[in-house]
Every structure is written in structure tokens, then in C-alpha cells.
Image (cartoon, rainbow, N blue to C red):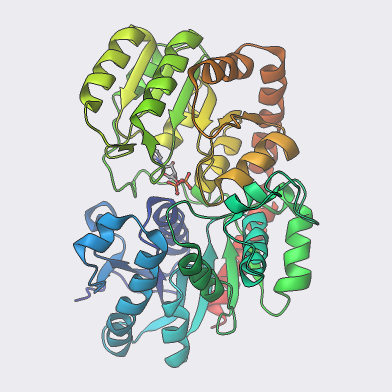
Amino acid sequence: MEKTREVAKHGRLLLVPCPYQGHINPMLNLATYLHRNGFSITIAHTSFNSPNPNRHPEFTFICLNDCLADDLVASLDIAILLLTVNNNCKASLEEAMATVLRDVVCVIHDEIMTFCAEVASSFGVRSLVLRTNSVSTCIGRSVVLQLHAEGRLPLLDQGFMEDEVPNLHPLRYKDLPISAFSDISQSTKLVHKMHDLTTSSGVIWNTIPFLEPSEFTKFKANICNQIPIFAIGPIHKISPTSSSSSLLNEDYTCLPWLHKQPPNSVIYVSLGSVALLTNHELQEMAWGLVNSNQPFLCVVRPGSVRGSDGIGFVLEEFQKKAGDRGCIVEWAPQKEVLAHRAVGGFLSHCGWNSTLESLSEGVPMLCKPYSGDQRGNARYISCVWRVGLTLEGHELKRNEVEKGIRKLMVEEEGRKMRERAMDFKRRIEDCLREGGSCSRNLRELVDFIMSS
Ligand code: UDP
């Protein structure tokens, strides 16, 4: 099953990503960094949403038997799917650890892949958890657990949605990280497992302490003072690589189109790898973009529109109306796009990776959060870091999209947001430099793993 491709200097690490794009990207970026620092890397993945091994010849890949039924995959209930992955993959990992993975010195797993900590511990191997969203999200999830225990969920039935959660400024109850794709009792079951760090040796976090300093201190003091935390974000910047971990093919034809646009003129639109919108919302977004008169690059992911009947026609009309001023693709090379000088704003669903990628390039955001941690991230973007504004309504509306784009791209308010975003970019570059917090924490992480 496994081929050793090189002699390890520091030993073999087993990395286990959660099978969604926003989790695969940071895990594979971390793998690249650790490989460049002398470790041999094996990636254990599910067959559902499996990464493409051909793009990473420097790693060894093994496939865990997830036994996911097609109807479960199609059901879109992410919590049940992930609980099933945790159940089903355990035996497969145990077998691999007893045979081909006997030389593993440390297991690094996504916080959602909780079975890995149990398996590693039963083999006497240390395990580290990788967290791929913010510290604030993690604290918010604890509040969700508490509300659930008190029988105060679902929130929709409550009168306090708009109130701020005590001690969680600036989050309101409606900003708490609750998935739109899952039954609340299943997702709290998963979160309970994710928050249990009893068999973990440490936490690796894709965040930057200066972004959420008080949340970080609170987490360390109240929740996790027993084991080390390595805040090494933004992970996509720690080991730049040309090999992509995208599950969909990136359409690079948008880059020559971007080259032709004036600096800071283009609004880039992407709602990530999971969010779904209605056909009506797509049309509202399209009209808002067209009416804004700004050039735009818009990602419409295959399958991202609920009830996609007639979607081909909508997209054709959309492109016709936009003419040369618009470029529509199914999936973009997002990091290159955000780093492009022509891009001046990002209409985003505010997934944590997208948020860090945008901040790292100094691109201000127009936020349209959908689910999970996205509302909380949007709140930080708009109210704490003040590098964006949020479209608050439940559904996208063309006049709000148009107004938001104008504000962000051409008005004074947007200019100030861009200045602040550029300041974040500079501070992030400082963190990544030799001696900066990110590079120090990465060094400590490598030393910690080597002390296994
Ligand atoms: N992404 C991309 N091309 C696209 C849209 C998204 O490469 O057209 C990448 C993006 O750079 C990010 C990831 O997909 O790394 C999405 O993760 P995020 O946490 O932002 O959102 P999620 O998909 O988990 O909701």
C-alpha cells in the first residue's frame, strides 16, 4: 500500500485532513512545510472528496475505507456524514497503523477527524489537532453546546437573535457557528467530540494571534492550558507551492482577463466550496454585479445553485449582459486572483480560509455569510478589523449588492477599508518573516514534533 519515497531525516508524520476543500487546503499546505523541514509525509484520506495524489508526488497517500453510502453523500447532512466518517474510518486507520504506518512518529489530524486521536493514543503515538477556523469560532461553539444543553436551540424560535452574546463581543446570537446543513443534535454531538482534547498532545491553529488576541488569551486561560498551542497561520503562506490541492480544476483563463483590468478595479466573487444559493439569488447577484459598473470575476461553482434548472440560460444571459466587463468561471485559482493587482475587493461568503487569504493580500471584503462560522467571521471583518461591510439580509438583493460594491470599490468608506486591509497585509508579512510570531511558532512546532 505504501512506498517510501525518501529517507526521512526526522521521521514519518501521518496527516489526516477532513474531506472538504476548506480543510484539505490548510492540511496539505502544512504537509508541504513539514516535508520541507525534513519529515516524511503520509496523507490518509477518505475516498469521498479525495485529494489528487498525482499533484503531490513528494507525499505518500493512503485511502481510508469510509464506506459512505451514496444517499448519505447526496443528503448534504454534513454532521451525520462526518460522524459516519469518524465511525467507519477507525478500523481502516488501526489496520494501517499496525502494518504500513508502524514508523509514524506523530499524527496530525483535522479537529473533525476525532477518531485519529483515539487510534494514535492506542498505539502510543502522539497526536496533534489542526484547527482550521478562528479561535472565536471555537469559543462560539462552546456557547452553542451550552445553549443546546439548556434547550434554547434552534435559535430561529427565540426572541434574542439580535442580542449580543455576553462576553463574546461582537457576536450576536445569530452569528454563532451553527451549520445550515445539519440537524442541531448531530452537530453538537460532533462538536462535543471535537472539543475533547484529553488524548491530544497539542493544537495547531490556522490563525494569527494579533487578529483575535483576547479570544486567544481566553482560550488558553480557560479552555486549554494543559497542552501547547501553535498559532501558525496563515497556513497558505507558510510554504508557498505551485501544486494545488483543489478538488475542482482551477480555470486559469481568468488571469489573462485580470491582466487587462486597471489596478484595484475588479470585484472578485466566490462563495467557497459548500455554500448554496437559490436560482433567484444567483440572478440578483448577477444583476447587482452588472449594475455596479465595476469589472468582476465571478465563480459559479458547479452544483452551487439549488434547483439548477435553467442555470445554463441564466449564466449565458449574465455573461451577455456583462460583456467584457465580466469573467465567469466554475472555479478560480483564488490565491493568485486575490494577489493580483487588478483585484480591489472580494464578495465573499467569509469562510476562514478565504478570510485569511483576503487579509493576507490586503483585499477588503463585501461579506455575504451563509452558515457555520461565516457569520462570525463577517462580524469580525466588518466590526473589529473594519476591512469590509456585510450584506445583512437573508437573501442577496440586486440593489444591495450594487450599493455594497460601489461603497467598497469607489467610495471613501471603501478606500479607508482598503488602507486598513493593506495594513493587515503588512502585519501578516511581519508575522511570516524570520523572528515573526508565525515563523517562531512553526519552529516551536517542528521542535515539539521532533521531541516525540
Ligand atoms: N477556492 C478556490 N477557488 C475558488 C473558490 C475557493 O481555490 O474558486 C479555495 C479558497 O482559496 C479556499 C477554499 O477554496 O482556500 C475555501 O475555503 P473557505 O474556508 O474559504 O470556505 P469553505 O469552502 O470551507 O466554505
